[in-house]
Image (cartoon, rainbow, N blue to C red; front, side):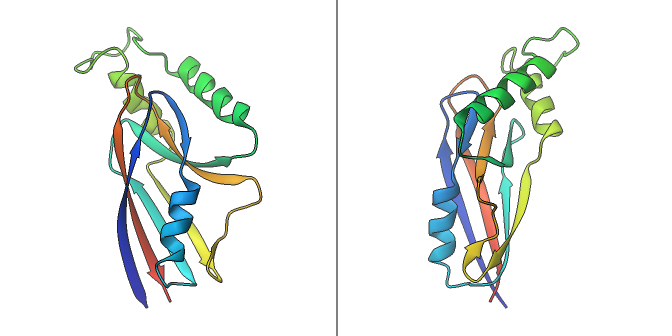
Length: 139
């Protein structure tokens, strides 16, 4: 059994979904591991990770609009606004989604479906620098 670790640095331009499947595939291909399990973990409390459709960009826009309606910025129920009106809403959106993913690696390929991609879901309005920790365990 072998292990590999890496941290991807991703820049965002504000709220939305940012696909980074290619960066993950490139790192996995260079790992030398052909079978195992990849775990991804976002190192922030106001962003999340999703496996989502990557063929039609309206899916990502619709998801952002849905979460913005579900948890609007500046909602008066929130008292935590230390970093602005999108602060607590970003934490709530991250709590409703997920901060880690596990994806099987089979014969050197991630076991993603035809239309699936790996996305960082940015919940803050301002551009951010995000980190995603990758851990690959296998042989």
